[in-house]
Length: 265
Image 1 (cartoon, rainbow, N blue to C red):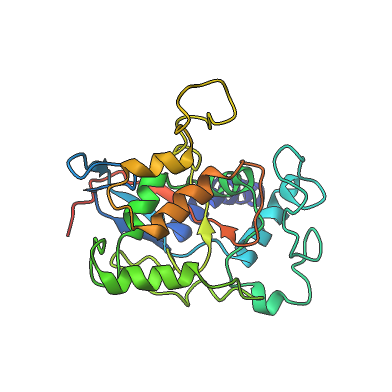
Image 2 (image 1 turned 60 degrees about the vertical axis):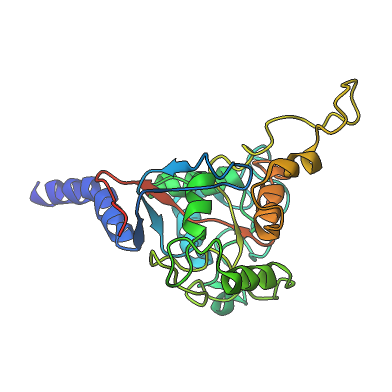
């Protein structure tokens, strides 16, 4: 009887223990404002303080998830939730394969938005919003907002111009930013909860609309900084996605709303 009671207590506490352990791997991002790519300088967007995973989710972490949640394994996932390339770099449902030693600690890729969302929710978290992600990604090692830091911008531009390596590096290999978050730029593209929110209007070139400039290229005319190529690439890439898509350089990390106000340091 006592053993049964102990088992039930452990079973009930397990999610809380798991959440506590993962919370320690998150960094607080203080509240503030920023100017998104398509915003005006005078209309800064507020972002409430939140917690963000220090690292993108790794292959090893996602493998543990699919073992606990078999419906997200390669052979079991429904096609409406992930395309045919889902986890294509893994050998099987429960094995990364012979390259596991090289991939365990690198960001998981080839995962759909549905799978990423399910993973975060399983951890008691959520995907970050576009605004949260862009806000946190503005930070360099020493500056909370490195928007006007030429060296920071150039490093980002150089990473985006490089081809993908055969084996992605470990999640700890990229730089640690002002908030203590690693690899916002320099490892993989990342899913956000509202990834397709930038395209407010459809492409009208092929329709009957008289506004022939109503397509993504014309949308750039309202950008605050028309030379911010790295931000243009991120917004354009997100807008090209569908939630079931899986891409060989697209991963994710999780966020969590903060119960306390995280003031700017």
